[in-house]
Amino acid sequence: MNSRCAIGAKDVLLAVDIQNDFCPSGALGVPRGDAIVPVVNRLAQSFGHVVLTQDWHPKGHLSFASSHPGTKPFDVIEVSYGRQELWPDHCIQGSFGAEFRADLAIPRAELILRKGFHRAIDSYSAFRENDRTTRTGLAAYLRERGFERVFLAGLAFDFCVRFSAEDAQDDGFSTVVIEDACAAIDIAGSLAATRATFQERNIACIAADAIG
Image (cartoon, rainbow, N blue to C red):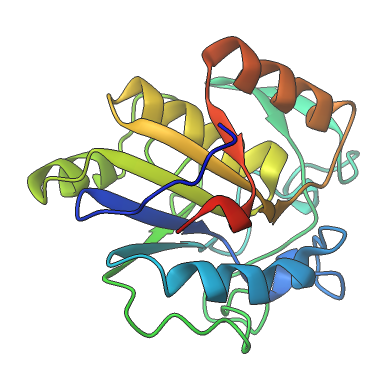
């Protein structure tokens, strides 16, 4: 998608997990994660409707390496629902790391969707948790309000943005990723895998400058 992309009443911006722990000084810092904040702020001014997601883990969450003796962050284990990456403790409920970036300025956001709060299930996608059966309710919320197209920005491109984009498409929404409003963590080829998946699925990736 190279042409200008006009935003209308049936479009929504989904800004994913722009939180302190996902920025470079955080517990699970994404390289250049802080650099996307001004881009997302500018984008939000073009959208009449914005939804924010917030990673919101209890202490001792299943996805934390500290919950599995003998493991370390970025190991992969098998859990009841399949493969699970292990992470440093991050975005713990009520902590500074779980707060949105102080420079994130989207006062007109209509919904803050918290995810990952079930201790025994991780949650990358804003639509389904990692067991792939537990829904967050976001799809129903968007449908009830008549939205048809979801634009995604945020952190990280190759995890929570990726799975949110795939699920948005699977739930029947036209899906667009604003790539320079995202940053990737790139673990074990996850960035290349994300690009390949988006191409296979025809999920459009555009630049922020194309919005208007």
